[in-house]
Image (cartoon, rainbow over all chains, first blue to last red; front, side, top):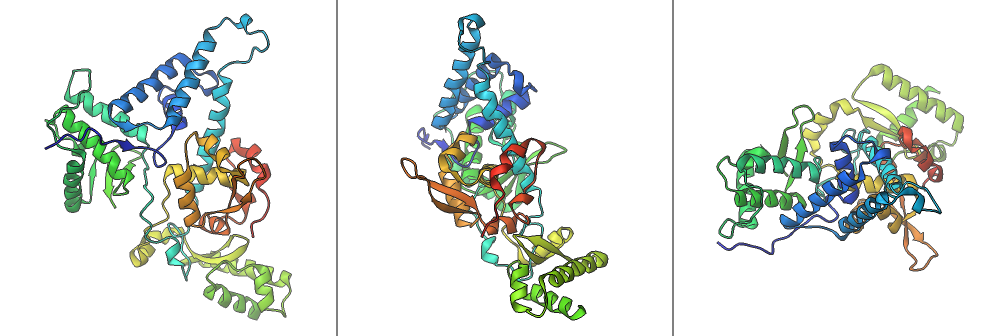
Length: 238
Length: 180
């Protein structure tokens, strides 16, 4: 077996972007968007980026732009206020305004999704079927990338107490793991996220499984959804 | 009156698209628009009183008979639509266009902070958005707007009917014109 070190999971376009990561962190730490603890959020943001890079997830350039914006704001916050003669504007506004707008759009998108959608909730007698039939190319993630990463980090914590990530050379490849997972789906139809990670798997195996899941979402092979009450993440074969 | 109502009902049953009052009027020249409107609201009341499998919806500037959402699971056993289901990213992109149209790609991407070329292509293919033209600025970028199909799919009368989350008022201003 060869280790596919060049296997990079692309998260462009289909998964979320830097704004989503910020929103995720703000929700996670339950902070007020008008009073963001910028040092904490910046540190956490960079932590996720490092982590994604370590996992061989291809981080889009936009993530890096946001990282530098955050770092800049953080350093401007450290300047004494009176040295900033022309304006006493809170440097965080640079990030608060786009965040506000993004949150508005997010809530609008949620409201749209809740309507009685044609072809999903309501139907017409003579449906132009091709309009909403059989279009598979669009990946569906009801669970966000960052929630998946959090769920995965929990699994990692459980299997080992060693802090550093190292990807072992003689383990199964992402491609092979996808084939295995497809086999599981062929018989079961759907599985929970945790089921795919066996208890006695070593770290590199677990990492490969995670990358395989991401890749399968990207290829529209599976859909990831989270039960609203139990919080259990389940994968569905499409 | 009773007959006009029945004629309209028969038209609604056969029409594929939402029927506008103007269109009904072209067919049913002996009735005035007011009469047509009354007949439509009469029909709608009858369907509500009957609480049957379908109802009359006002969508995309017209009227359409649609099945009630309660029965979605049964319909899906009949025709198995592989659904419209859009990813969060696609829905957000669509929402940006819906609320801020007409809008160029750069401004769309600015809101989500991420490239959206692939999503725009998919939304165009599904005819949920369309290209309105090119903006007269350097680079002549394409201008995007939503389509009538968007209104139909999202069960909206017109763009003014877009949901108004408390915080969203200021975004709605530019988006009140009717779509062709």
